[in-house]
Amino acid sequence: MKRSVAARVTDTSDTGWAARIRRRVGLIVAVALAAGSPLAVTPAPAFAHGATHSITPTAGAVLAKAPQRVEVVFAAEITSDSSATVTDHTGTDWADGPPVIHGATLRHQVRADMPDGWYEISWRATFTDGHPVAGTAEFTVGAEAAAAAASNPFRARLTHSGVVALYAASGVAVLALLLAIMTLSRGVYSASKAASGERSTG
Image (cartoon, helix red, strand yellow):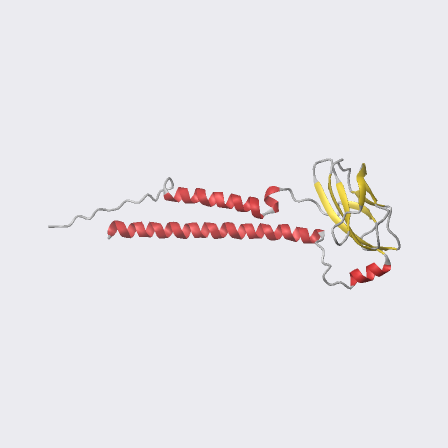
């Protein structure tokens, strides 16, 4: 008497297991893109190079005394919600009051009691066509403070080129994650299909 072998049928169609895996992979990739890459959720701003005509004080300037104001002149007219800060090494903002915006110029008064030291002007603005722009410029008040800042190897700042590199690196990381997930899903699917084939012929 021949033994009858019942073949176990496993759903390997796109409407079954594979489709569920693809949906899960898609969800994981969407979450990864939203959480891991600034490029996925916000338009990359244009940075200082090419977006500004002038910055006062100029980048890298060493001033004998604190300036009364800082000023950034952009390449085009900006909107009224544009802003700037003037921070020291502790993160204290020495900008005084709201900025004054006129056409392509953003001007910000500085507190009169600003001491000698290193400072960074940081601005975020929006052109009237809706395109965002951001950048930084450093200056120093007092010759002694300038010498101390120059000799400090730990005073590394994230410049506009560093931010661009950060955006690029995050994009590469997300792409690598996507490829890894797709490769893993294909491997699991192939293994499951092979196993189901062995069970049906065993």
